[in-house]
Length: 464
Image: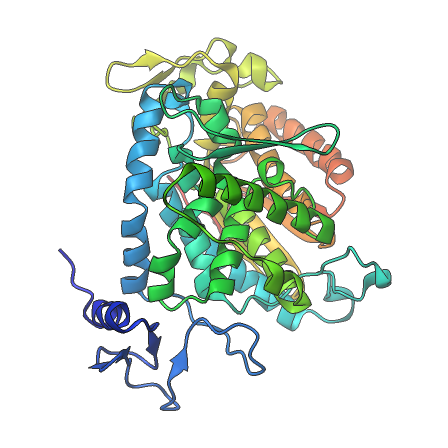
């Protein structure tokens, strides 16, 4: 078992004395009620978790020790989510457990660093991310520089814990009223769990408030964390437009409704008070950026043939049974043999077949800002085989574009690269899709790099 000396020292002291952890620099050195990390360049101690201070210092990313404490706290959710998937129609659903959470955290760091770079360095025509002064629109929110990096990381780690069920369902009715109910824990309804999982990920964060407080997070930061996790699903959160204040108010309302019912039905009481966030435009716009980062990171699945499903079982797509020249995904996968588990049980659901076929062909994702275009975030998607299941792969790519569309006040670049060269047939499908995307996703410039990998100046991508 790994030992986290400075962190556990700090947690032990804070639990005993009711304080939170503070640190400076690096290196373990426990002093009374504080765990001081010695060796900082300026010799000062920075208390993590202060929000609203005049001289808010941009946080560093978490230490590995802090990160593992939080990952340890989601094991219970991952285990139950796997067990639920195995006994429901969620067996073949894509993986949303710890391995995915680790990848999303890693991608979130990448996307956030790129977004911050664009916000910092973009000027004039290169400044393509919206700002708060646009047209004096009271509903408008721009993109804020991400200072609370630890908040973002924690939200990324927790963002899918709601797949474990035992939560709440919030439905907005046509008359703008809400139906709020506790999820069935006797007979699991996977579709209900899936539809409400982002909301319940936020509730799970609120249930762990004491843990996060001991790690140095303030109450405002914990509420922000819950809002970010809940916002990663457009439909469940009600936040279809990240740049809309009204949408964020809707998202907070849904969390509050679920939290209130939790406090009636559960002995594990929670609190949620987003007032401090809504009173601070800077924090709100930082929230926009962090939720955008999680959405892009979440869809950035580096996959491969034989990837795992939510049940923990391997999914094998027999590529020679996929009709890669069918033109549409339904026909591509209609006769495809796609198996799950040691016994090779057949996956028959059309959407599941498309998802595994398309996503297993996307082997790497990253997000960059190029020196030539310092104000643009460029999200790069590496497709392994251009000629394999192009229609199914393009549906998967469309999921990426949809996340960028949900931040309509930004202008973004998405670049498709290939590890293998394209036939004329596949190239035509990608070109047609590129033309369609120009109309369907007006704030995204979709680029396709056709050169052979060895001939490209841009060496992005990874072979399987």
